[in-house]
Length: 399
Length: 194
Image (cartoon, rainbow over all chains, first blue to last red; front, side, top):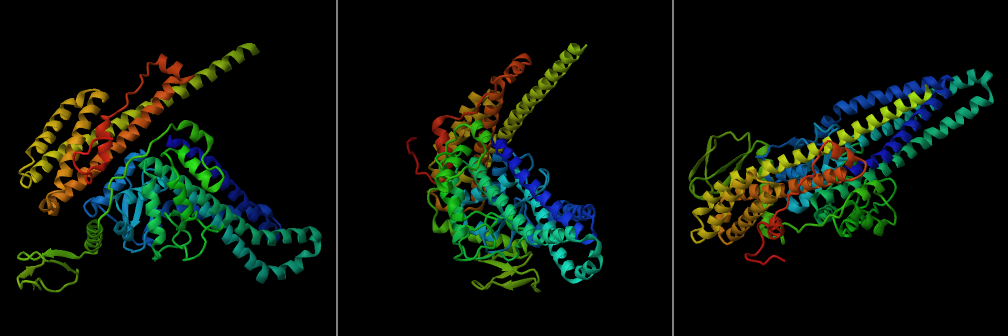
């Protein structure tokens, strides 16, 4: 069933092809304009692209994880998160358990990395752990698992590298043209005449338009992958309301993620750069507007891709899932929520659990007084071996 | 001469199609086997967790001997059914799920127990194991559906018949237990199944 969603990859691959062609055209005209040789331009463009691709392919995951300040956790650090990731790994049929990372940031977000199926990772922020109940967390993790399973990470980094190369070439191209290029052009343009002028005009137009076109294409692919990840996530959990209600909480949160940048934006569950009060539905967004995603998820009558398609059509009046995926999937019913109502105590316990985990991961020592049981969180650089308990005066030893 | 080549070409094409369909069937069958192994892992995990849980809970729940015994008994029955087919096994595991969820519901009434760190950790493990069982079952049943479709649809059914690919068996737990399963901890006791 879910393999079928991947047939949509064909269309995304087609868009990548267009991006690649655009890159070659830009290279050709830049070459023509500066060296009177389009082939040289194409070779240079391809070389820049290849180098950036190699960096992204072999270092991309590590760069992303270290830039965002993510820390790897074990099952003991946070059993709930680890279990939820494992549950979704099972539901998606992924063969290998992804690594689980956590970002010490009160903003709520999550992302997936992993170019191949053997080395994948799911990263969530501490804010997410603190504010979401189990069903909601499951929904978010399912969405990320869908990105891994649908190979979106690979696709988006391929597209991102192409986009980056086009932007870089256009940027340098305009600089060279305005500062160095003009002088040469005057002395060498005697023989070439009108033909060269046309090439120049096309090159200038391309350098302005190509990055914009590439960006719009890239954003379109990215938004589409988000919708598809929502559809797959609903199929994994059989409970679209989990993700819908998580998205609602994410949208209501005003905190912005500290360590996100433009390159890493498409990997997150929601756009880390959204500004308050701005309509996010414009063309230059990596993510679809949250309100629409919620409305589609809430409009689902079942959990199959066909149900998502129907709900999507109601909201957007167009189609998104390819017919082959719809034909293969049978009807899939929704499941009941796991917790009926969340109490204040649950929320408190979750906050405590998360903050304790972050403290432990930052090498804090958590000790309890042996007499009255008061808990103390001792920073790693605390100089003494023991201290007097503030409640009962008993001497507490630090291990 | 040309006719011979055409016949040879058609033959080669048929062989290639045969190989492709056969490999596809094998892949699906392996996926089913793999998915079944996943369920197995989770069911075993649950068997291992139960003695611990009963041991932890026993001290707090003096008046719930029946509930505890029901869990232990259901576990024993399910363990015996391990080598049985998917249908019988599903029934036994469904009973165990129901017994466990009853125990966890009753546990809600014991605040001391709810404050016990050991119990909380066990509860998390058990809740998650229940989820993993139902998600692996979900994946298994989807895999079986895909595999069965392939063995019954033309033209792959011809090859499936020739190479004796048997249809897979769905893993169903009893209907009542099924509905109770995800609501492990917060359902009021003795609610009749809808």
